[in-house]
Length: 482
Image: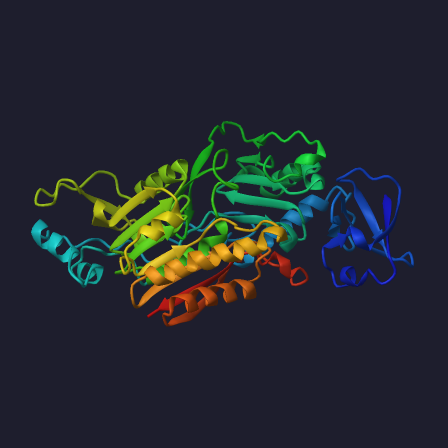
């Protein structure tokens, strides 16, 4: 194994288990490693410290182990097993057998609608009343199981491996009901993808339906790799390119071949559930909605209006499909209703059906920032502002912070009095303190009274190593605006 010798005094971070060795800390390399080779890292005094993948760039070594041998046959199986155990610990897998909780596990049974039919004219009038869904709920028209926490409802999609957070820097694996989607962010992980695939087969056995490599957009493109997305494994008879998954009982269509990232933004699961907690009776605007995750939670929680905005036509098509996945089959016939907005029965997280008007949700394929600029003040009393990363490197940080400030100032200025703003940044180079200060500046710019009700982050399946705080990339605030 090639030896990487560190300069005097440059081994402190490794002794504190930080998973990166920066090129400036390297004194000499004994050998000629190719990018992606496993190398040993030693102190200036010759003491072994760790081993990991060699790479070209500011990060010279991504550490795989501080003790175990990464070349051992069992290394990948053991590493993925440990990652799975952490997901079992937080309830994303029922137990070590890999069996997911049944839909009824830990949940109340379906709540049937009242058998007494309500006149269509009364239903329409109630929908327009200030009481909104509260009145509808009280009369039995909206009977979603409010008492059942979202966290107690079934989920069969999650992040299985989260890079440094799981001791495997440069590797992402997302689980979609038996399909593992892999993304390599380093040459070493890309070269190890078949070993990783075999390890997944060892860990999950017959429960594994497929392993799809989607590294073309994440692996270093200058390394001369053959970056073509494709299947590393398919179980006999498996032919799907997309599937319907469950998240807290809500249904989402995931297309890992054509969707962004691995197909779904799993890191927002807990924050979507929080939006559902506050959405009842509110008019909701979901900016940068992608496939409509926040919108589905708001609709099933009883929002009186949900408008979803994204510039991607493909994403907006997925929003439509996801909405209809959560709608019961067929359409209700209500002749007293405006024919332009036929009533449709919406199926809640427990299979509970309730009549909704299509006025309740509108999907706009346009630029989210421009949409917000044109939005009248006070039209919405709950906004989700979840833009893509404005800064992917430190050179873009200054412009990114200006963009975050302008965007948040517009949202705070436009939300109705007593409204809520869920605002996020997924830019890793923007830390949570800097983001909070930027939102503070945005709030001050509007002159409105703003309170922080909650500080938000990525879900438990996106763990942050205590030795690698840089892994806390998703940060958010829940604001109350007077």
